[in-house]
Length: 92
Image (tube, rainbow, N blue to C red):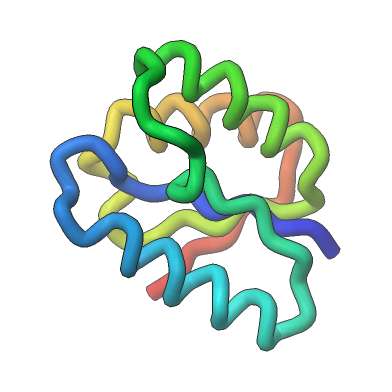
């Protein structure tokens, strides 16, 4: 199964580590992972969200990190993933 990781990036100094830990755990659980925290810097948030929508589209499941509720981007991803009926799970 293919999995996408959603969580707070903007304003989160530890986001790379948080996403990497989640990615490693998901890979160990047998998932192929799309990790938006590895995208290159220099784009606007809406440009990243456009790319993240495509990443969500090709994944079977979306995993949300605990801090997702404080992220505008992750709230958008939740709405999008819900709207297209993706399997949604939460990392605790």
